[in-house]
Image 1 (cartoon, rainbow, N blue to C red):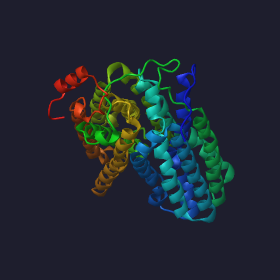
Image 2: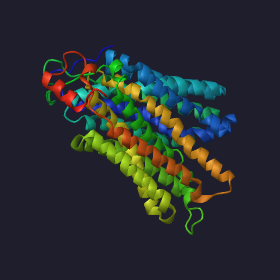
Image 3: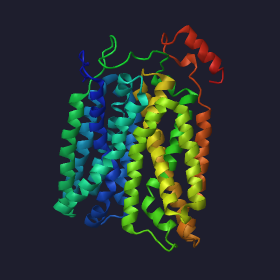
Image 4: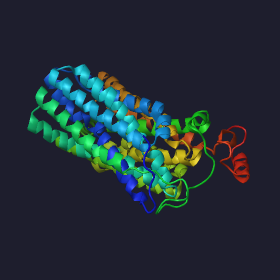
Length: 446
């Protein structure tokens, strides 16, 4: 299935809404926690067991994006969005069947495995197309779409909670909620499938500037460059630092101020989590758009350098001031979201638009790694500190220092990024002058 080519006069500003319809849908993954308590009660599950669908979904996101990226580039965004629609919606329908029949393995398989494939293919489906439509503002374009993934939970969380209140939190109520999710998201994602277009190859499409020409690198060649692996380290470190707070947000702020005269209530902690989600979403569009003005390397210097400073302030002064703690956490989560949204444009700068979607898919294995690493560091350290008799903010001091160290590693990796050596370019995609410039900027070490 190939998408229709945009006719003359078709506006490129219709592409971001098409991408948003997919990303707002699959962003429901961040609202999985709404289903955890009902599932634990209805099926007698532990907290670890009820987290399995989400964990498997994130793992499958990275794997399907990595292995399916080249196919997405070859078949186009309409094919990719259709696959995402079928897999993500089918995952909910299988989960509904699993809940109705009390077969939890079917929920894990449906939401985690099948739905996770939809997450990965859906996440990368619009990236290459958006960059080709907006060669002048790739950071802004990808930020608009990927903002949807961060904001999907803001819609899904209260919506899911309301459905469970209406249908009940037993097996039947959970099954009905899954069923409504599957059908509704299928209809919503279908809008993106029908709306998406690719730009004409002969000259610029309506409203779009002429495509930027220059060196292009295939996905197979990209993974053989040091630039790809340096960016993999950068993304892993940035995501690990952000997800470390995101996964533990409510208990962390409660613990930090447990021994003060004004402890944080459960309601306030929930409000803090909502604020972090908003910062995550805002950072995706705000910081990625800023990267179009100041450059990708400079914006990652901000993410990693200022992020380390924010962690240091939390570690040293966080338990003395709630506003300071909240502000630092919001900045860190905005960098977390911004890092996701900016990396496709960074890849475009380094490797061109030729197979940027496939390269992005391979890079998302960094997300899978960080999704395990971040929570593991924070929770493991906190458990060890608790066993040693510590409590309050002292539970997190060591893990905060580790996060600072990881961000410093990411900062160094970003500083080492240089233009890709001409030997990796697809033949005929750079001019002699560009090749000479590349050789001067990056000698034999590249």
